[in-house]
Length: 612
Image (cartoon, rainbow, N blue to C red; front, side, top):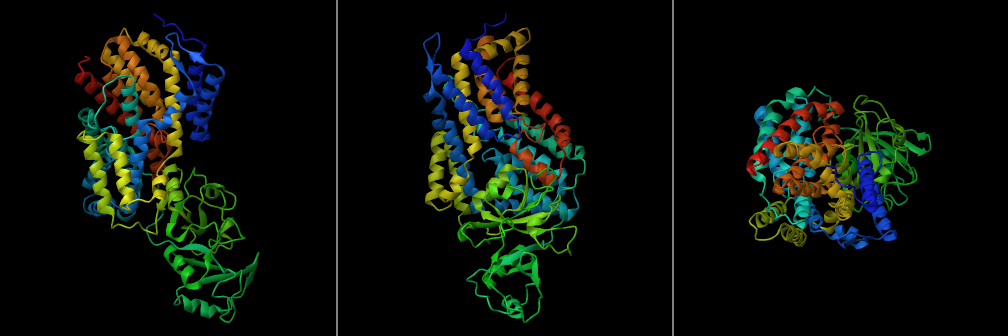
């Protein structure tokens, strides 16, 4: 029997939900912009056309904005801050170092260890920093041993997704599903409530990623060309107050103990002076040099000059735009095909300006002897490396975007003296939540407090861990789900699904729901798929007369199964650039993985809850 359609408000919200899913699937539209538009339409629409359901339930602006205070969102933000504490203190670095040494001894066994390590860490930490930590190691090991990095990066990236599904804090998606279902009357789930089911499926997935997946991946060429110290073309700007004004070139080189190799002196646009030892340095001169990043920074201090900003000939990094000394980082960004830097010049691409980074040098691996007279006019090609300078927060944002490859994220390494303390705080958070001594939200908030008060984390770094896209998408998804529930749209969608699934056994209805959510999450944000899918799961179970928990878990598991496309999950985008993969590689490797997870989780859920 076809369910009765909802009223006009319900139909309008259903249409808006379709529009939202479409917008969330568009790469060219910033996700936060799409989410804000949808949220604004909800608020304005229900403000202009107030709604009261037949049962007397109303919904309005306060309900739509309540997501900003949702406990699941607060928990997610607190856990991201705690994870940042591990990052900035280098708490995970000793693990990474041991893994690198093991890889040189036994690559096959090391790959299994890497997969298990990635999956285990992702059970308790956000998987983005886990992948960011492992990527440089895997790339370096691949180059040293002659093993294609592409055979390692994708399996390890998938392992973090597989591991994240095993606990309630493994991903933000898990927390949202647990919170939304609890608000709808389902019994709260503890940290390891569904771990036994997920771990069995994850174990099968790990075996596939270890033994089969590397053989399915073509030998792709990673954009990193070598591991030797890279020599960059850079320009040092002599400021008005520089101590080297009036010094001769010979005196200048002597200040660097003979280390600096001066290739040219630019005294105006296109005007170069002879590099005679007796030539004196003037204010405004630009010294063209070729050297490694650490030496370039040393020359800055020795000569009292500043690395030149390639985007603006009028100033150097010593100007007000430069980050404060204590917050300065340098990073090497590799130009990859399909990235916003490919086939562009530094002066024409808005990428660096938008993200608060200053490009200061360029490395050209295929023409090491070529001189670059104006690094801002260099036509970037795949494999070129741009040395950038900026704040730790700005560099972290670049890493999270995933559309460029950050090879070396820090020349100013984090202090590691706090690493054991940061690790102990994170372990305490997990234990307090796992034992039920405190709720996950309270334990995470106490973890942030401990990180900050113990100086493992400062507020700049803590706030830099927050993802504005994640926040606004979660709030919008919660508001949209609330509107669909109150106006009857969710009940209508559930009724349509039941109408199709009712003739089949309950197991088929469960497996079908899991697959639908898994396919949906390939094209829209997994948080949106989870928040919208959870009420549907509750309604479907109610209509079928079965316990709702297995259907809710089907949504949770399905929303994490982003295996078929590189756009489905953030870590997929990260390894896409680093491994030199093609779009089709993800489908080739991800489809068998999706089938393994789908069938194993469906069978385990049906067996656990007696739905056969």
